[in-house]
Each structure stands twice: as structure tokens, then as C-alpha cells.
Length: 338
Image (cartoon, rainbow, N blue to C red; front, top):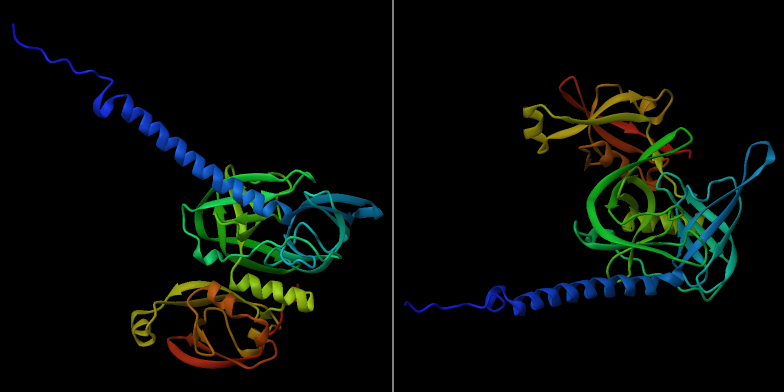
């Protein structure tokens, strides 16, 4: 009879040792994930407040709303979403996890970035550390923290599912696109608007602003532009933007002009607002705007990004293409009324 070698199926690569190792690896990974989320929650919980907003309604009625806010300085400055505290807000109270309830005032709001700044009369609040959304990567762990129900923080975790999204905003007749919005699959609960989106080290990289669909949330990024807006709200109570009065979109340049200018696209003017700085400066529909003061303009977002407060009342040289010829026009932007 031939010798038969029996192999114990429980041993070797597929045996109990491998199974236990795999389970240990899974538990270790789960523990690491849990530790990160828990650490972020513990770090930020004292800095995130529940906001209760009382505002004027029709026929003099008072309406209650709410959201969340994030403390950014120990002396009481708090960041939230502009749509949480509209211009009709009468009072805004902030409740913290330690039981404190403080009255706050709206320092300023910028509806076109959906950011607002509050101030509580307190000097020993725990300020969150602001991070930089420009360093985020798709797939990176993020934690959404709000305080929708008062003294019980709401914590959800997920990943950055997309970067570079755009969020349309509007104030009165003015519309604008918030650029580089963060998209995450961390669930946003009712009342989480204005709360913090944090990275794995507990740094606030975004302010939660909207639910984009099932399992998709959007956050306004904390970046250089956001910091400028917050600084302006602190010092002036508003963020000033320049206004030209054109509507348009990106259009490919003819091959010859593309070679000459060293770029492939420009902004085609679709509409010029009557009486606007663009109209007074001679801009017409179908013109192609190539640059402003020598800064290339290849899309509507480039044009929007250049409309900073420093340009208000200044002479701006616009290089345009009309009928295949390049010409320069002088424009004087005015302040955008929001």
C-alpha cells in the first residue's frame, strides 16, 4: 500500500494561525480607525456648539431654527454657515458640551461663500485648530462633527470622496460659485450645517454646508481664500468683492491665437448687464476675455477669482479678442451688492 500523507487543513497557510492573524490584523485596523475617530471627537467636542436661531418671520411671527458652530478663537469668535444665521436673525444662542449656554451676536456674514462669523462674550472657550483643505486627498479619512441637539455632539466619519466640486450660492440678485468644495461620504445629520469637518489630526478643514444626496455631504473648504473672508468679517463685518457685470463661460481659442497667446481657452461673454462697468467699458457679447491686468483668464472661475475687493474703483486693463483681433479696454469695477 502506498504511503499516504495527510495534511491537517487547520495548519499551514490556510490554517488557524493564518485565520487568527487575519482577524488580529482586522481588529488592529479597526482599533486604529476607532482610535483616530475617537481622538478627533474628543479634541473637537468642546469647540463645537449647538446654535439656536430666532428670526423674524412674516406678519411679525418669530421662527426658530438651528445648526452648529465652531469656535476658532478663545475669546468667542465662532464660524458657521451663513444660511444658518440669516440677516433676519434676532438672537443666536450657543450651547456647549460642558453645559454652558451663551448669547452670541452675528459679526458678519458672506452668503456667497456660505460663511458667517459669530461672537460670544466669553474669554475661555476652547478654540479648534484650523487646517488647510488644499492638502486633502481623495480617500483621506475625515470626521464630521456637529451639535444638532444641544449637549450631545453628533460624530460621523467617512472619507473625502471628491475634491474640486462647485457649490452655487446666491444673495439677492448676485450669484457666485464656491470653488473647491469638499465632498464626503461622512453622513451629515439635521442641524449639522455650520459644524466642523476635520482631518485625522483634529484640524478643521471644512465647514459642513449641505447634503448633496444620499451619503454625500459638502463642506466649504478652509483655505487661503476662506481665511481672507474670515479676516474681513472680523475687521469689517463683510467681505467685499468687485463686480464687472458679465456672464460667460470657457471657449476654445482659434488655433492661431492659441499658439500666439500660449493658452487654449478664454472666457466668451454671453451677456453684459446694462449700465454695468463692463458695459461702460465697451465689453460686448461674443467678446473673448483673455486676461485682466496681464493675469490669464481661461474660465469663468478665473474671472470670478480675480474680482477681489482691491479692484473696486481701480482701472483694470482687459485684453479681449473681437472679430479675430486683439484689443485692450479699460474697466473700472464697482462693489458687488450682496
